[in-house]
Image (cartoon, rainbow, N blue to C red; front, side):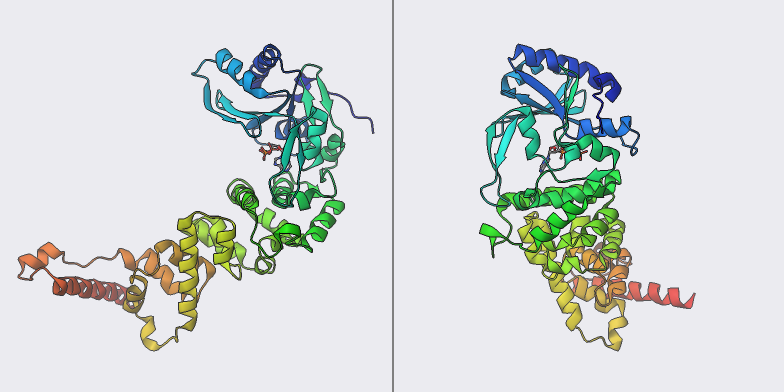
Length: 417
Ligand code: ATP
């Protein structure tokens, strides 16, 4: 099919971006940058909007690629846009990339680069190249379309425009997943958000690559450090910015959750956990991985913050404690649960995860969390002292006794109302 080349005006860039684009072009020329193109999500979403494929929300960031270094260009940009308009300016020397926001519009400018993956899942070695060759390192054909403002031409070596028209997500080459398995999570994010289908070849690539996982040099080791970081970032985007239910359904359908852990691939209860997690304000990712066979190990492999790894350990400990607890008559008493849950062995967050998980007696944990823990002794320490009590451990014990009595009275009155 003949693909029409569309002029920039027809691509319908949001209005404030047009002026920015003009000034970036002028700055690039002055900085001696030979070629500059817009690439990735902004071009994709403009084409989707133009072709009325799916309703795209606002385009929030613009990625440029240049032949040459963007560092000199960044100095000129800082000159052209007053400091009032520029924020979040950062330079990454290693990848020759600059990031800045102009009028709160996020702009990334990177040197066109070739990537070579010497070890699967590790960060690639990079070297400068042309814009056309840069497109090969990208994930899906729909993200490998560039628009060169100077010539007003679209560069589309992998037929990304056709893929947009047919709502297909297609990996660019056959080693894509092996090189960077985070592309699996990206596939789910785009498929769910844009309502696109992952091509059957791409699904086969995911399946065949995962059947060899963990492969090559990472055999028997946790994820390489760089992969863990990227995987965690992709998962955070999935849970916080995307229709996460559809994303997880797709990942499970493709057999792809096994990249995280076999237990999660067969887990049928993640929806319940995460919905409860939203109610109890627990991070969705934590609720999700709580269903793994070994959530502690997974939390470590994903390099979650140490505080979250600790929450996972406490949850695991609480879950084992409760599954070994022989439930007796007296265990229905709120006092029993207050004493256990206030022993400070387990943080509130880990108790919430246990509720989300649906551990044994989770209803008691929920009552404690929502109600019992907020009930105070009807008499304060000061009141007891003024009525003759002396400060010390016996005063503490009396306050606890009064509090437990209060909890029981409130519970009883609820049943006898
Ligand atoms: P959105 O921000 O709407 O999710 P985007 O396409 O702008 O979409 P980014 O994560 O900002 O997404 O990435 C910008 C571009 O960089 C992508 O369009 C893609 O071309 C490329 N890219 C990002 N991550 C990868 C990856 N892991 N593998 C290959 N290419 C990638």
